[in-house]
Image (cartoon, rainbow, N blue to C red; front, side, top):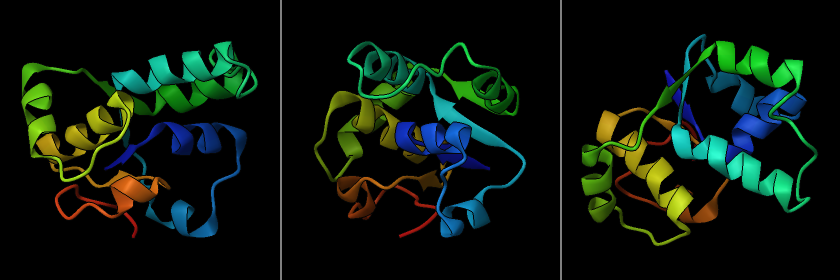
Length: 120
């Protein structure tokens, strides 16, 4: 099981994952629910092409479990050893709370000593 951050989920939908990223993906993925919100915001700002209504996005979501921001995730944010935008902190806290390796390209998160990471 691997937790995908927003940009990795987008790369998965677009088919632009790096070879090393593809090697750590198994058959079951999770995302924090804030990833869906962040994709909507990126679309609204024109930073990515619309994805949420595409068949390829729906196919990816069919194999992805969406984890909610519950009180334990909120508490776990306090344990993070990096500061970033709220979405990235929630994504990292989700991995930490559930002990699920996070697949990310974000340099701040990759420098973390507490978030379980799929790749460094």
